[in-house]
Length: 311
Image: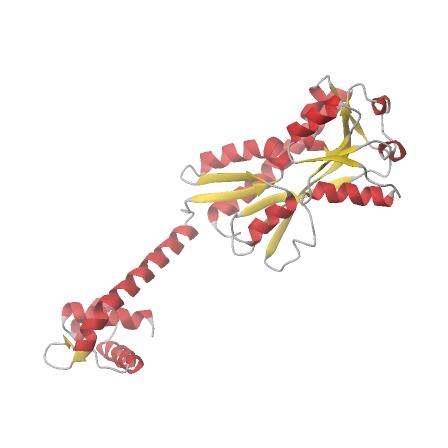
């Protein structure tokens, strides 16, 4: 059974004529006849009395409301897909790691809202692993996360590398490690650590680095908000290894200190991830372009600010 067969059936039922139905559908009368014959063969019952006027049989009368409903659903579905391709989707859902939400995304979101005022933006701050899971489950359209090649290796995943950034040490301003311009790893591993919760890429990155240093990670607290990291570190001797964008504001807090690590430096890669079936949808495509344009510009401006601050 095909939609055009149902459409031919409805046209004949409404006009009472195979000839008029053919003109209405823009096909020949023989085409209409073949479509109805094929439909009747599928159903196993005649739908029309073949006479001077095409009248519905009992089977045709029973089938009529069902055919109308099916064709209406088909019309609704094609209309929704046409609107999707035209960029008329009602909302755009994004999952992003906390530092990106706080520091990088606001200007992108502002510009997107100006460009697509009818699209409702929904942004959720999640750890990288969780963000990639909700993307795979179809709950969000894009994820901006710390790269994890094990979770982005599926053929349908589209991964854009956005930037690489160093991991730095956050500590209280009067912490013993603040004396260093670059904190040696031998000193970092001596102090208790405040880390991101399990499921966050940063926890995994820090654990791997401690393993390479032959040291045991002494994690005294697991957190998932940047404000909480600053509050806890400010109060004691615990330190936190955080990406540069997560400690940007802490540089201007007199109660905190931020220092780079010694060699080997630790870096994280931030990526934008979506799926191949989404990249051609206009709002998603536009948001992806904005992220590339504005995060690149912002990264350069941050470098300039940091150079000025350190000069």
